[in-house]
Image (cartoon, rainbow, N blue to C red; front, side, top):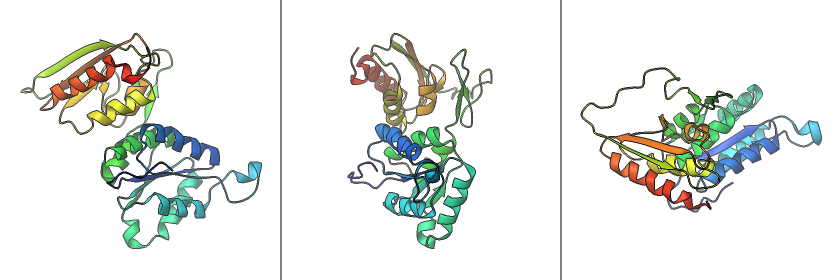
Length: 253
């Protein structure tokens, strides 16, 4: 579980997997991008060794919910079907007050956990964190490494929603100087920083407020970052992106 010492309570996450190591690994990955969010691993069956540990545990899920709930609610993410059943059983045993602030996400485990954690880090509501988890599925064309956008945006070739005709669009382009490029941490930094800005923002054609879409771009050192923003906070968005990219996200060139 990550450090929960921030003043404001945030939505917590419980990661339910048939494998203890997978649950712990997902928490570790998401925690690198959202250190202020409570991430609780509830993986593997009770007792046993080796293959006997593969499974799910009602008690682990129940304890995980209690551990992750700081008052703002909990989103549960699962891997396979029986993990969903175990989570649903745990929900049935919660008292009505707590049950009202627990959600079971229909989401991809890894992508959903990362997206939800970044959203929760920004102080989003329970329903907003759930929506981020469920909208985080991204497929990648192995040849072109271009994202097929699902849920929250259109697939390649589909028309994008038109920008407000009365809103000026601000653009900027920069070259990534840092060795790792736009990898997980920079993507999380940008998505988290842009989340609360009142603007429509894209980076290289994808929603800049989605950490998973930014990661799916696969932009390495020397690649160009092209941003567009429209809306009241468009200038602030472009300035934030420019400062982050030019500084190399604080990483070595």
